[in-house]
Length: 296
Length: 243
Image (tube, rainbow over all chains, first blue to last red; front, side):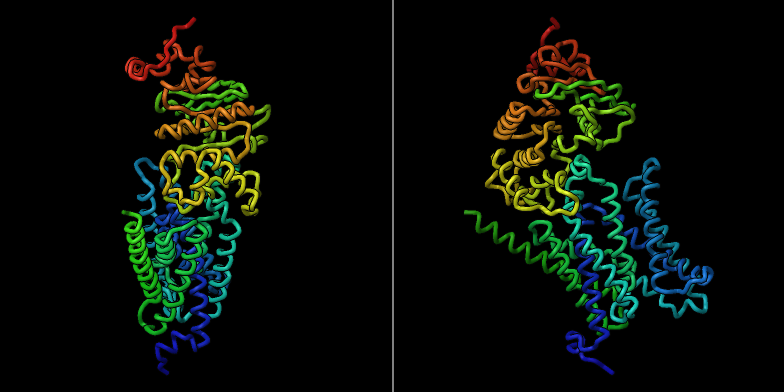
């Protein structure tokens, strides 16, 4: 049964409607958390974390039968979260070596963990159960064909991340703007920092199924970067980033349903990148116009 | 206030008492550890050994009585936040973790911005302010903390004359109301004129006391070494021989 693009865009299909709503929610969470991550200058570390989820997911898949647990999505995502946290600790550890800067350490960890993930994936796919398990969707995403179980995980994780961002908005803003002042008034800056990176890790893990490990970071960066072009205070920037992320998720999910052979993650990210480009151009034109009116 | 701080890298054997109710300047050459001393007092930099006493108790007990002005370069001024929002951050110590900024906090922020002469720029993004104005925003944030001790890291570094005048007026006001502003200062030439009490620092305390006692030729030579001669002639530092 062929559906027209209009049918897809209007979300006449119930499954697609649910998937689009979830990807929109994921995009909103990515926008909010991503804005804070950009202001804290942690995009590269987050990239390493997102790539590092792959070996964890595959490991969990391989080890689940031996441990007597089912290969449920929850187990796989927990596996991904464990290696993501491990990668963050690894970066801190490698930084202690002489002549190793932050970006070098991040590159080492990103390459190492993702390489391990691909190697393990090869092993898993050579197994009889591995080929049908859909493990490759963790790399490239499958937004339009998310299962009920995927949707539950994404909804819960995205809502929790958004609520934490709103509740702790004032503290997270202080941490990102002026860490030493935060420490001087007794805020536990290391704990807050860990919380922020935990939020990044959470949206990365729940975004794995929809967008995939390779490109989920782009969904964290692009809405925040676009919203910064519009300007204003942080609350406004985060709101704009959430809206941009949600729209990218929604449109990307619909477009990926229209083109099921293309990787969903790539389509969502392309939509987000297009939105960034449009917003940047329009904001640039508005700024130039503002300057002209100010000048005599 | 008593500080004993032992770290082979930066500060060694610091033993310092600062009297309450004086305008105190911490001076010393680049890399003397002036900022580190302040940060160690506030627990931002971990102390190797030693203790800090403020107002007869530990810093943790009197955290809300201590205001802090970090160096201007320590933050990203492109951050999406307005001047009044930055100033309101000074109330966070008294507000709890989850309590949002309210009317009262916003009013306090406006009053502090008025004191430093920036009331009309309250809603400007901080990136659109000049360096001197940014420095005054930081000072206003410290005022909102309503502390009795203020630790300030180079509030008068590379600012315009208006800002320097404003900052000095605020510092004098604080001292006259019984507070103790402790200011890291880079310019030896103006130190004697600005402060009632001077701490001369170079990795350890060289001297501490009123300017006429501290800024002697021998002390300055000890703190600044060979750089002193050039510095003294160019900056016309008030050099006095020990009495």
